Length: 242
Figure 1 (cartoon, rainbow, N blue to C red):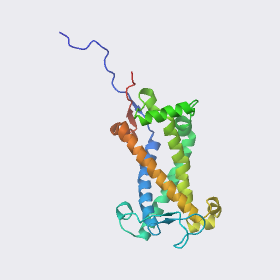
Figure 2 (cartoon, one colour):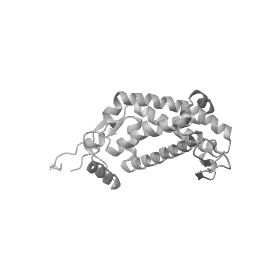
Figure 3 (cartoon, rainbow, N blue to C red):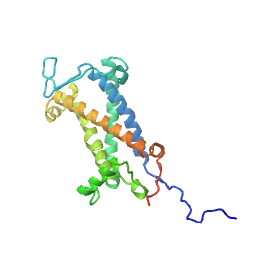
């Protein structure tokens, strides 16, 4: 007797190319560079763990934020060495800046309009609220919807790529005495070198917060499928809900 179920056969998950090579290369290069920049930046910050607004900042000036030194386990190198931290930071910074410039130009030529541009109705309050509710309930998109960025993802990626990352680079340049001589308008743009240092610190920790939220979402959405898609580009589309 044939024991095969009479119902419809279960379809195999469809595999698609989700991330292009340029996106994957930039993603992993960016992850490595941001790790070097953040940990070496903390090593530099440990030399004077206080933040100010304006042009000047020294021990007797009023600081808007005073912190203890960060532990050596999270700095590069893993001990206090201001010169070495600066070497690491300045070695990674130009690569990071030019990689971001390349990716921004590539995004403007196709990725932005194809994947990140907001579609009609997506910015409606009702639609945004529904996306927030779905995220809060860990209700991730399935089927064809899983291949498109939702409104929260688009806003986050646009904010990171076109606001936070350029802000980190420009404020970093503002803190450089050499750049002050070449581009003095940067100091005026950010209201002084100490203001630039404060904005640099805030933007860097905003990127860390985004990174942590990104990792949590990857784990909850299915780390094997998500990470594989960022390594090989291949993504198994989750079956659509009934």
